[in-house]
Image 1: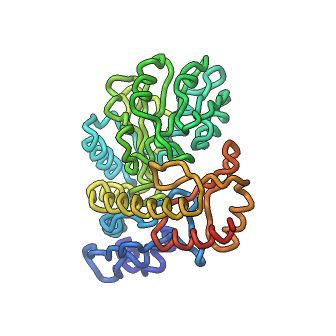
Image 2: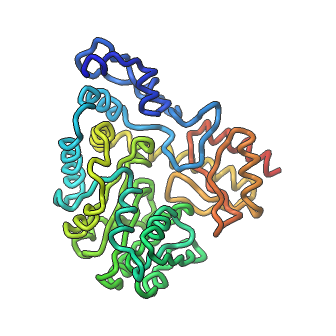
Length: 381
């Protein structure tokens, strides 16, 4: 196994991982007994962001890719690919728990936070125990709850794109309330005072999952994570992911933080070994690279500001973003604009039926956003 792993070419390794940027980030591994330093992508580079010259601004990915430390960790673990990932699962769980000041039994890792959403739907929704969500929001949990036979109730966002938490809390026979904050697709936040009041008012028999996938990008003084509030609320689940600012959407790792009893209810529905060794070591390494996360955050903020300026110059309105994407009010149907942009090799977000005139665009690199704006101005002319 060791000989095979070290004999893999960079091209083969990239194909196995499905990461187009792996070939540029890894030094050749042949004949080396220890992992070697990896190259740091240059600022503004976009590893993995373009395929066949297609600019991908559709899935809220981090165009700067994973931490170089994550690459090195994967390379160092490749010889252990024949082993089950139990030790690394425990090590990452311990690291996540330590980073949040909670006990190990208050953390559950999943294959992306999407798996945690699926577990929550299985554990807390059923016929007679509804799922309540905002409209629009991240949709996957709706499908999971429907599979569980639960009613799904959509409560429209407020006029300024906040969760209408009072109406969400008032829905009868609720098993689970899903709050995405910052919200996808609007990139808006629900203020911290409203969230705190909502958690206090919600019956303890109703579970609430606060999805903080975009937590690292939110810089509004009116926003806060609710993760520290889990000891006060036995019904609270908070999810985070390595798919966004950590730049590992293709590797799949996320986690939940909740009280021990809630974690046990979620874990009862989870498959064994749903996470692979490579993502576990990569995620653990990424947790230790705060500089890479800060660089991604700052670049996102700066490039997003330039896009704001360009949209202002076009006289277009947009929802102020607390994430790595934004929603632009086209004042016309999104679908034809989306198709026209795709014809120019710029891929943007899908159509959201609740907001058919708003276009969701991921914030890419400066170069990518220049390409988007050039195509966008032409399409909108």
